[in-house]
Length: 258
Image 1 (cartoon, rainbow, N blue to C red):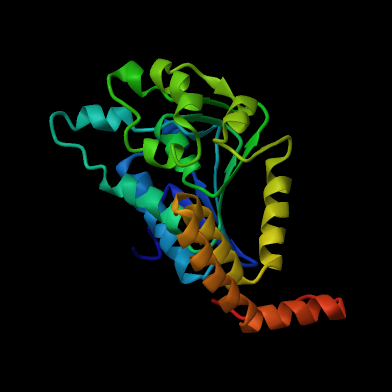
Image 2 (image 1 turned 90 degrees about the vertical axis):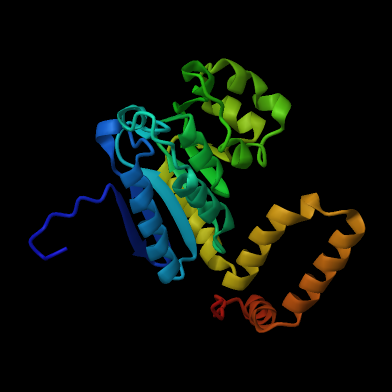
């Protein structure tokens, strides 16, 4: 791209004070998961990785967080086979990022958009937000997005929404475990979460994210053994020494990076 060409990206990434904010801005199709949006989302995640972000906030412009698959684009492709790998890759990158990922939602979320949101560690939604898993109504299933969703939600709690495509509200989503926060001020709530993350040691936050994803699936003996090893490593490391000294001296900690 030359300096005279317009930026046609539909996803932005801004890194400020260690927080990478990724903004979906494809308002003409309600931030649907087009090929361009997914390509640009991966570029934005690259930018966050290169910046060693302390947290990634995934948000949006317009009245919808994400409408799911771009059905017009799919229809225009005709009989050409769909390639789900860019979408799967984006979900995996949000789930596997070393730093916490936060979805900041101020608008409707449908179908694949729910999977995108559910791939984040924390999900903050505005009180009036609605959700719907509409796949069965167009003759498909919520297959790929079932992976992140069913790691958050017991199947019995989301079965009706998946089987009927009926919309549900933010409080229902919170009760089933699909989201973590319902807020009248999403920006303020996300800012508070980011402030809290920045207070922790980067390596300790990364280790905590990892155990949140793994410990529940371990057998008890293995879990105790691996977590004891991790605890000893962290307590004997420089961040623990700095953190305890900062606590005793009533000052902010000066964390090492990594």
